[in-house]
Amino acid sequence: MAKEYVVMGAKLECNKGTAPSNLVVLPVHHVKLTDKLKANIGDCVPNTNVLPFAMCTSSVNPLVIANRGAPVPCTPTCSIWINGKSDLLLDGMPALLTQDKAVCPLGAGMIEVKDSGQGDSKQRFVDMYEENNPEHADKMNEFLKPLIDDGNFDSDVVNIKYMAYRASEPYKSVMFEYLPNLSIGSHTHTGTQNYSSTQNALFVNLAPNAGEGDPRGPYVTFFHELGHGVDDQMRKAGTFDQSTSGLQGLLQSDTEKKIEDTIKSFDSDPDVVSAVMDSFRPGGTPVAAGSVEEDIRNRVIDEYKGNLTYSPDSSGALVFDQTKQRQSNQATDILGGYTENQLGGNGISGYGHANSYWDDPRRTNPQSSEFFAHNFSANVTKNQEKKDLINAYFPSGREHIESNLSEVAKNLGGGGN
Image (cartoon, rainbow, N blue to C red; front, side):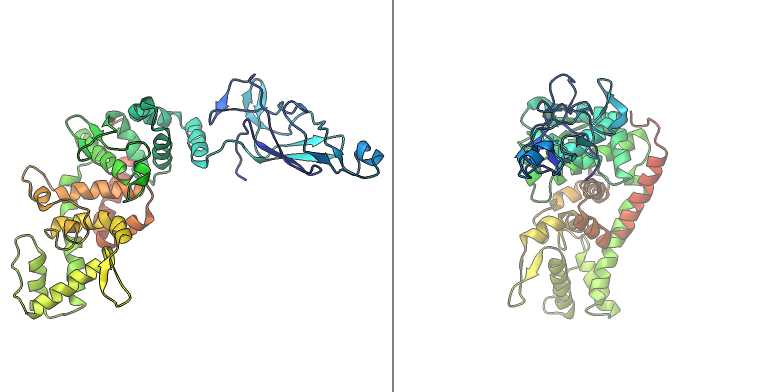
C-alpha cells in the first residue's frame, strides 16, 4: 500500500481479532483531508479511536486463557501508534500514516491500517498533489472557479485536476505557466465549444459530468480548447509561435509522405503516384473515371478508412466503426485539413472541421493551430492511442512541438504571468 495519511473511517485490522474495525477521529484536530478528519499517532485510545475487532483469539490473552482457549470479546488496550510522519505535526503529534502500527499489550496483537479511509483514489491523488504543490493548486482553483462556485461540477473539478496534475511534460509546465492568463468564459456553453483570443477564455459545455462522457475521450474537448489558450498565450508572450515556427510545412510534408507511401504500396509508377497525389491536394486535378489512377486512389481511401475509422465485417467489407472514429479524430481532423476532407475529417470520420474552416482567409495556418491543440490534449489526458496515431501520421510535427515546448519549459521565468 502506498504511504498515505490516515483519516476518519480508516479500515483497521488486528492479527488476533476476527473482524476489522474503523478508526474514529474526534473533531479535536480540525484538519481535514478528502473532507474527513485527519488522524495523528495519538488517536489510539481504546474504544474511543480504536474500536473492538469482534473476538480476540490470542493464546496469551489472560481472558482467553481463563476461557480455556476459546475466543473472547475483543478489548483493545493499545496506547499510541508507532512512527507517524515526524515532519508533519498535527496538534503537536506526528500525522498518522498507513504504514504505522499499534500494539495491543493484552493479547500481543498487532493492529494495522488496511485502508487510509480517504476514499476515491483520484481525490486522494489531487489532495496529496495540492498539499505538495500549493502554487499549482492556487492556479487551478482560480481557473476552475466558475465550476467550483457552481456547485454541480465537483466530479468534473476532480477529474480535470487529476488529469492536469498528471499531464506529460513539457505540456504540464507550459500549461501551468500560462494558466493564470486564462479563464473559463462559460462552462455551460450551448454553441460550438471554442477558445476566444480576445477574451482569453474557454467556452465549453460540460454540463455535470458531461466531460467525463465525451465520446472522443474524457475531457478531450476541454483540454483541446485549453491547448488553444496556451498556444495563444505563448504567442502573445513571445515565447513560442507555432504558426510561424515551420510547423505548418512539417505537417504538410508528413501528410504528403504518408499518402505517397500508401500509393506506392499499390503502384510504384511515378506518373500514377504523381497523378493520385495531386488528386488529394486542395484544388488538385481529379483522376479520370475508370483509370488506373482512380483504382489506386480508391485503394488509398480504403486504406485510410481501414486504419482510422472503418473495420472489416465477416465478409471483409469495410463498415463504419464508431470506436475507431472516436479515437482517431485528432489525426483525421488534420488529414482532412490538407486533403479537402478526402482522407480525413468530415470525409471519412465525421469528426473534424469543414473545408470552409480550413479555407477561411482570416485564419493563419489553421492546420498547425488545430494540431497544437489536438497534441496538447492527447498529452495532458495521457491518451496513448491518440498519441500513437499522432506520431504515426505526423512524426515530424510532433517532434517539432515537443522540442520547442521543451525549450520553452526550460526557460520559464514568469513570462506567462
